[in-house]
Length: 307
Image (cartoon, rainbow, N blue to C red; front, side, top):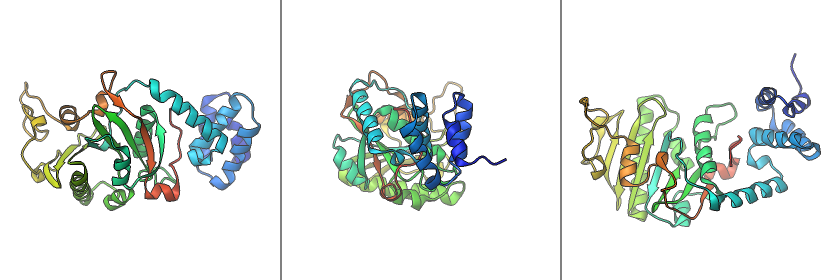
């Protein structure tokens, strides 16, 4: 028997976490125009934990844009409170990011065509990057991977940009074939070269969660100095960088005592490895989540993120 939206909203407030998760999953398949008013009413009239569960469901179904002004203000205050005391921690690194040797956040936002920046903790920014990257194939998530970008605080002198402008995202398109790999290569090479005209030096890194993919680009003053992709080593550009010294490339034969470099190894030696952040990392300023052209049209992706 099919359960109606009002009944599902009641289940969102159930004490059992599994029941709540199932109800939220079902609500995400329904029209937001029907579901969101019901959840807002539950948030407004509920008590105690029921109100908190309704807030979680609102974020899962409609994202931050589904919240009213009061809830947004509360979350912003919580973030502002947490930012000064946050200690850097290793990120789950899966996807691609840029590294720019600048502390000029406004210039970075402008260079990537980003707007409406919201201050975030490093934890929240990292969670958003991973969430958007891994959830983009889910129903109703056509713009999941192209709506927002996480711009880090300055980390040991470098600003890291996780994500890509929406025009880059759409130019690359869906993956899984040789044409996709070529579009990714050409788009990232062009973006890195253009950015390096503005910032002098730009690095781009890419790594997969478990498929062995790893890649990196070094650009300076409009020229590509180095490009390497483990899945297409014949197309590499330039001589190995100092960060690769003493290490073998992933496609090369590795003797038992040999060491292989990957994107994170190169990043650690040449800029910053986001997977090795910690108390030793020097932090200046705060990071932001900023919207791309797609994000400014369609809003933030839906989903619950830890602050």
